[in-house]
Structure formats: C-alpha cells, structure tokens
Image (cartoon, rainbow, N blue to C red; front, side, top):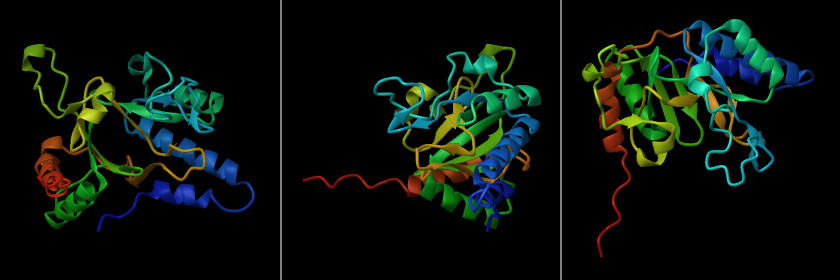
Length: 231
C-alpha cells in the first residue's frame, strides 16, 4: 500500500476546535513552500466564491481551476518570498504549478490511478508525488521529458494536454509545456467538500515519466467506460 503524505495530516490537524483558520493557513503555507522548495514553479489561481469563481467572469468554464493572471507561465516561480507575498495578499487563492520546466504531470481517472498505484507498488516501481483532484482525477508528478534547445528534437505526443484541451482528454492527460495543474491544498467548492490533496507529497523524487506511462495507459484502458450497446 502507498503511504499517505504528511500534508493531508496537516490539513486534518487544522480542522478542529478554536484557531482552525490559523492552523489551516499555516498548513497551506507549509505545503506550498514545500512544493517551491522541491523546485516546482507555482503561481496563484482563482478560488471558489459563492456559487461561482473569484474571477467574476460570468459563466466561468473552469471555476476555481485556472490561474489568476494571463501571464501565469512567466510569473510561476520557486522563490520563497514571492510565494509568501502571494499567500498573504490573497489568503483564499488556490495555486497552480506550471508543467514542462522541471516536471510533467500524468493525469488519469481516479479508478485507473488507484489500480496503477497498486500495480506499481507490487512491481517495486518508484512513484513520485501523487495528488487527487476531487472528484475524479489523480495526478502523477514526474520529471519533465525535457525542453530541448533544438525544437526539431521535441517529441510530439497525442497525450499532450493544455488547459484549453482538457475536455478532449477524458483518459490519460500528459501536462507538459504550456500546461498546469492545481496544487494541494486547493478548494474547488465554497464548502471545501471538493479539492486537491496529496496522497504522496513533493518530498518524493520525481520519476521518469516513461517508468509509469505503460502502467497508467493500461489502467486507463481497463477502466474505460463501456460503449453504449448498439440497438
């Protein structure tokens, strides 16, 4: 079985009794700083507000799931002081991490991810950070496949997923250059019922994505919803 990261315990510790808000804020700060210290660039994102999104866009298609700034990819940083400034100026903000620099993310349906974790553990394969994005996705953080100086060497992949193409990838999504994922601890609903949480935190080293890819694709194929019967 995969042992749980310490980060969910921080969040549970912050959910009881007086001072819950301060404890949760400290847990959130520690979690996001740990991500930055692991070398994963972060940037602020929108958060739930009432029945909608803090961006105030009417009919926001991805409420609480997108960066605040259009230049998020340039602004994403691992600088501790900048992360603290963001946290303290926008205490309710979610955060994203920009993929394709240091790390990629393999994003799969939760049932497939659970099956893959069991198989990878049985085979002794090292798995890096893993998060769950409620209600239905599991995020496997890996080393990036690279950003070569010679663009002709870039490996195109049909699994590449960018923010605007999320709906086109119901199975396995590969977040690389130009994409992002929400970081724990993010809230996706005003009541906090849905969110993003760590199963294995950023203290785990990033594996080669190819070490996980076959197992994840097999698990996605096995958990694909059956086609509606003809007739």
